[in-house]
Image (cartoon, rainbow, N blue to C red; front, top):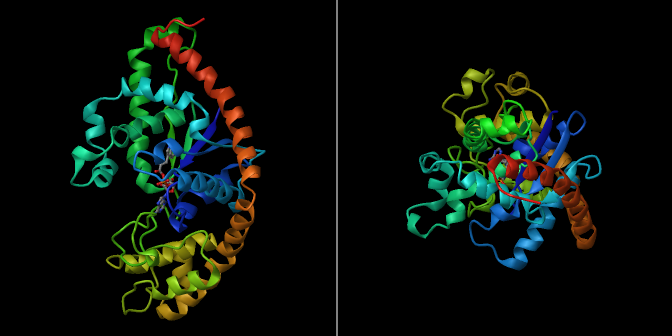
Length: 341
Ligand code: TYM
């Protein structure tokens, strides 16, 4: 059976990159697949989080999912720490994944920075927990932004090594040739990698010190308008064809954002705006962004005013998630050779 899983970290502000790269996909997939969407709080604490702030952010991300159109009844929406099977499976994967594999992870290198000796062990083992998130549900498809590609390759490597190492036991327990699926990433569309509004060579990120580098889902119309107007561009008018975006990262980024928000292709957008100035294009982009993000911000605000309603959604989702994950873990324990009653 096909199943979708994805996760978002509750760290700082959700932004347009999270929205276009991931959350809009979550919404689009919910009619066709059985979907599980997770607020990955255990991943968040791989770097320091203030406890009260973390609680608030977990609820904010949940509210954002719902405000963007994820239906928590049709899908499972929950937070990772309430389903202990993620941590259990992650330990087993710590014993499957090789040091050499993790040493290649570019996100660890970026996040650990120069002071690697002082990075948490959790930050290093982060991709193994991510593989556990996905494979606890034996998910077949994972919608993410481009930056998660390498982690999903690692997830496939872990699944494959587990399937190989335990092949005899997997067959002996009646699971056939393979136990874990080789999960497919879903990375598509014009905005799989949204860049900073201040620097077209840097990814839009929650941790950029400049708030002008990103559009937050909680920004109001004025903030969105200001940030788009101040977004870095070059002095040339927009090109008429995609070829003309080469070497113009800021232009490419804004055209990609426009296309994604309008649900059109870049070529299509350039067909309309080729030869026009950025001031004109930006004004249209402001209208588009405000029309789409304005109601989401307002709905997030409304939802976060009732934390207990959000907690009830997470409790319900966690119960339903655990019912699936617990079965996977029973099978994994049998396959590995643990004794259980
Ligand atoms: P996180 O919390 O950093 O980001 C959440 C989602 O947003 C996407 N994204 C972007 N897409 C386009 N442009 C950007 N500038 C941009 N920035 C972020 C991310 O690719 C992601 O899809 N490790 C994951 C969380 C995770 C996960 C999982 C994802 C934990 N377990 C299992 C999928 C499956 C992360 O840190 O995402």
